Length: 275
Image (tube, rainbow, N blue to C red; front, side, top):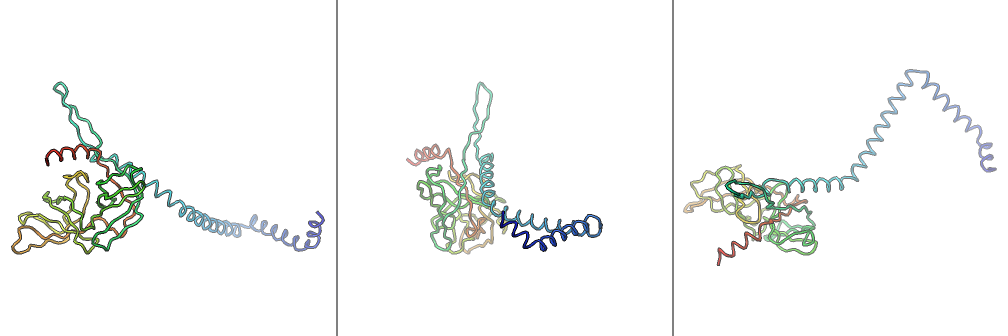
């Protein structure tokens, strides 16, 4: 207490000056309309700037949680897509009853490693056997198809992407409905080639390319890319078609693994047919 009294006695003139300044400022703002308006405007502006800064900082630190929430929400919505379900028809006493059974299950994941400039590129994602990933499952993104699961460990999986010389998938032209095989052109991560489209088919730049659903990897109608240019090669019966891939593999971060729940049944039939 003695120290406090000593401080007040030593600085009483300065403290009295500050108190009188505060009282004067209050009286000026309280009884003068011009100064009061200026003070309110200034305080509102300052408060607005501070609130904006605080809000921006808070939003920055919450981006990760918000992004995770949106990915989960998007995954749930994808699992509810009608194309992930297969129509089952059950005839009962002359009445045809129809129900839907789930064909595909969607799992969300993120890339942890990738390559785009090799002839045999691979991607690594952060989910594996424990999360329900299986070898041979298709991989897509919000932009289009990405590839197929090659190998799986407990918590990670390696993806064989479209931009790998070993990748091949059946695709259908949206305009003509003709289908062919998509392969990578081995040098540009944004380009691929569509094979086996005969010359009598009308193909134009800008035509959209989708998955056929013939294999057990991808559902029907997943976006693959767009026709870039079409060439006729003398002596050949098929076009040389260049495709702009829908997915930019340099920007790829979030992906979805497609688990075909009916694949074991389909594979068992293929074994019988191949015997």
